[in-house]
Image (tube, rainbow, N blue to C red; front, side, top):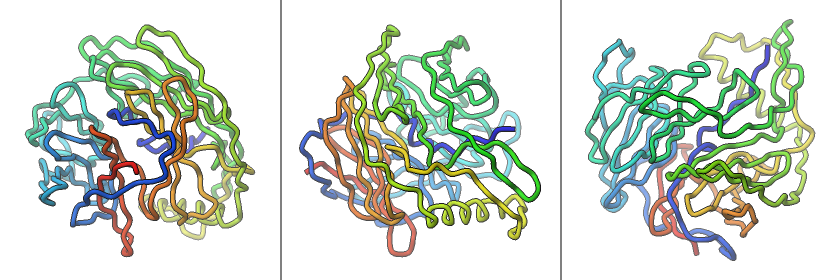
Length: 354
């Protein structure tokens, strides 16, 4: 049995355009919400200064105005979703996507369904989407009628699903992770190595797709007509995986296992790569930029993002303030981030490039 390393959904997001990042030195905070949350999803920009996101810890779907600080809770969290449940109900709101027009998709990780909303916060219905390649949710959408998901049951093809007809085709293939042996008590299983390079996929509103290649540290582009443009490989420093890194990951595994009844004294070993990859996840823009998050030598160090253009050429780097992480992009050069406070809670801020 193979266990895949968890993949952050943010790494798959195709987002709204912004200006080039060539020679930019950092971010300027324009505004932030006056309230904080235990755990946040990605951030999607709406019209007229509003944003939408989910609190994945308290399991709430939220809409907020960064200018006034107003916060609305959309729909209703319920403990179970029955067949035919109204679209305003959700069990585990985990991801937000923007479709065509003013339609927003809310992906419910527990209910395994996606509901549609307008930017004003009204539930419109449940998105009918063909179930292919297992129960993993579809997180990526373009604005021309497709959803995209990775088939983890095969050798990682990226499947494109036509929403109206249910037709499915393959638009890309991702490189399989590096594997090693993981031990849980007396049981040994094959698992993806922690900190090994991974590929990440994203799609832009017009259907243009990209793949960030973890082993080569490059970004490849697929045009809507199916032609590929391979990016330029960029060298990167190899950060060693330290014992502190290993201890931190195993502590997270044990903490996560508590909710599933895993004994805390169970002997656990995971396979680790010797060095960290060139990036941890990636966010893309329809103007041809993809931002790759560099790994950090220290867990609490500020984050830095490498920016590649639509030809796959490195354009520059953007350092983020301490405690901030990229969560989304918007119009007029807006950049959204989650900001960690001294209490460990996070809020949402809007930045511009300096």
